[in-house]
Image (cartoon, rainbow, N blue to C red; front, side):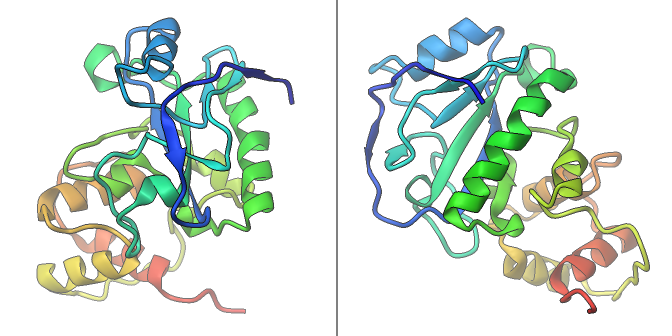
Length: 226
């Protein structure tokens, strides 16, 4: 894969080993504006990689360094997500500027990049997450149009459970406890539910805990039968 180096000054030293990948959308009107921001010392934001809509991959920060992409976030006990993760920005105007589907060329570049990162760092599928998963109260990206199933087919992300679903009839409090056990910060309870739905049930994002949500979360938490 051809990767174009476009160094950003916005990084520092890691304090943790790499165990995660965080996927973002740029959320800006165009690619150049996003690239300019991530490489400007005044902006104090960056990512390790940026993938344009035509599939071109740019490397902004070396993987050994801590890029500044996650902000205040949490996943599975980790609060310094920047130290523990590799951040990939995917060019898309986002919900604010005309959210749209991600082009095939863009996903075709993401898949081998993600596979390579996953293999080299020994990252589990459950730790390949979206920005909204690690910061549900603040973020919506990469959003409900992101093709997580394409990643799941290649074992690059957890699939959304669809078969043999069983509603455990948890109370809402029990669901939130299970959601926290799965990895989410549930401080803002409704936003945490919305983030879960955006990731695992994107066709209905209403913030309401129902039987389908409970069943999907139960399936995600249970070990797979051999």
